[in-house]
Image 1 (cartoon, rainbow, N blue to C red):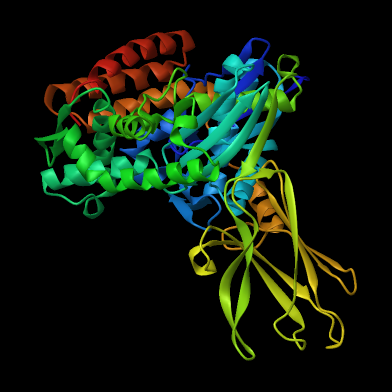
Image 2 (spheres, rainbow, N blue to C red):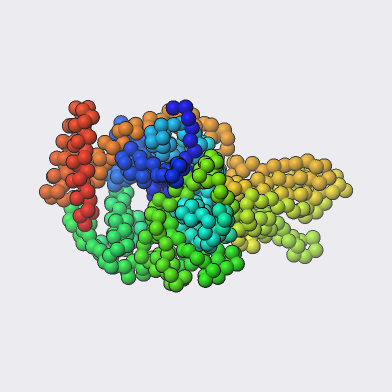
Length: 569
């Protein structure tokens, strides 16, 4: 493999996808199991190798201490997840998913893949974006560009009719994040007008709310039961949540202490227990429209993105707000990856995209902490001074001249924040820069501060002392949750020694995980039947006859589809 390619990746909270732009448009790339969706789950197998994707996800029920998922929410923090006796940061766990997607892309393309466009929630801050770049580095990938998820979705839709003039509202509710963007398409130019969102609202929160309700019906608290029991209850909640997308009511039996206990949920009850979550969706939508200087009637198209937008309550909310049904002609689970592939095609200067131009905006306000006078020689710190306002077109650069509180001050500590509150305590600190000042009280101590924000959402801060022209530049490392370069190098070395489960054996690992989950969720004859199948498959695997293993695996897959379709959990 000598040729190289740029791929597009949707690194999701629940599932991740990879795609590539080809002559006839963006194409999703299947994984080793033939699916284009790879669960964002990681776990250890019995032999000590790492499993990624479905094989890991299905072991969440049976090997809770050795498996994890939903780690995207911890990107850019110092939170660590224990897998057995080893601790991993979200960047490392995400790198295993990225490495798996990269292997799938190389197998599909027959080329080396060293570069990628990766989608991120529009509301990810600078540290979270840098953490995503670090995860890619751990996976051996260079990030060509980070693209905001709603922007990627709009690219996928805009490509269908690139000469049309229209204004999009993209509502993106994924597993862990919620984003809203307004974009305009005209003469092949895709221009982002405004973005807003909630980095801690997603489909997983709706699942958690339903798991709590099912626990109430069963007389148990999800947080008070074993990890395995809690995972099974949450798994059932996720299943019933999906069923409510096309049913008014759904029921199931939950096996508790060897007894099948009935649970049920109606769409009305589900709406009731998730009402607060739905309220949180309204504000970003209203803010994006206001920031774009538009009215609801000015929007030509309402597009829903992310698997969680399949929930009837979400579609009802959008329909009521805009008096029309949202579009979802492209699969909501696939559209971000397809758009990332379009951006990858633009980065590679693909001939089919010569007439497409893309612009983006900064989705949040960036500024610094300042002090204000509250009396003679009295100052109050903690106030927020904006530098780059939210929804400013990027790339952009803004500067301002600041000075010390008094002439005897020998240093300014520039604390960098992201947020919309007038007080920094309510915003997110993303870095700090110490600027030494001239020691002579008579010397001008004014400092020119410049913020530069690029198309990947990376912020650079420069501070120039006007009297000496000395420049200080902010490199956001060593802040809360961010890894310094020496730590990155250390972890890269440690990750290189880990055994990753071979791609061509993922199918067997996934089938065994599904069989064990089915055994865990069954009783009586069904459980005995699943146990026999599991023993037979392990026997066939010992033969190392690949053709026989493939044939049996196909038969078991058909059996499992029938068993997994039952309403017993």
